[in-house]
Image (cartoon, rainbow, N blue to C red; front, side, top):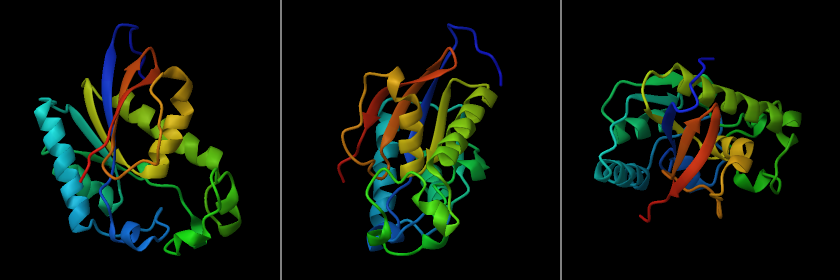
Length: 196
């Protein structure tokens, strides 16, 4: 990894994709995919409007290889972007595409391993290492990363003790988690939710 000087900082805007067909149908959606709904597109447009209102100019943009993340990113910015498989959602194994009623209560821990999915610690490591890699590889200071609800939640858990900002609810579609990266740590500055 690239080492930053203590005073070098970067700002990361970590965004969940817009609502999808499977979200609407309450289906388990990890590595499997479905398109954005009309509401999902509106959510991404509202997030773009917020970003534009703050005159944020992204230097780099990254997203998961899932269509729902790519399509959301394309609404949020017009700059070139890099896709990464390691920014994908939790792999739910054979429960992919099944009804959400099959999910256990939180925390999931290693529930999905029995269905050939990912364990929680492995998933948290994957997403946290990939976000750190994107940030340290970026030459810019304003970075957009579009990923997924559980992925963002696991990244939040990894760095929760570094910030006084706390999550109160589930992560809604197109929520923006604004992180400051300094001294190789991610400090949550703000959670922005859009009321559509």
